[in-house]
Image (cartoon, rainbow, N blue to C red; front, side, top):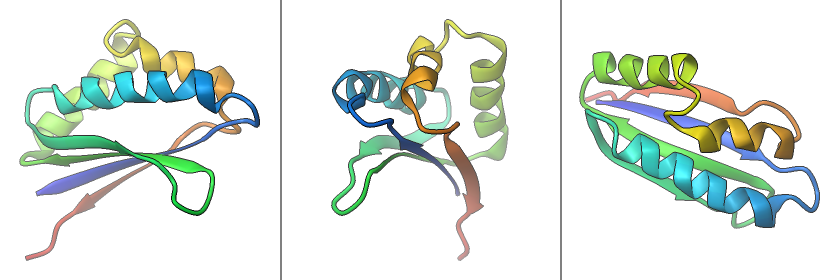
Length: 98
């Protein structure tokens, strides 16, 4: 299994506008072919939100990322977030160890 995490930090005063876009982006990922599980997590102590997803195949994960890069309309929410963030989101992939 593969895990993909995106970390988003909003500029002050932009969370109210950004959270619906994050929800839309997380829903796009969760509905992507091969995504077993995906959701949005809010901070308990801190300012960063996470979009977490689990994938059975790295090929499906690659396909979803390629769709994000090549088709801005696929998850328009992702590009709508860029002006609201302190910096581009941190994205990381992990492979779950047995």
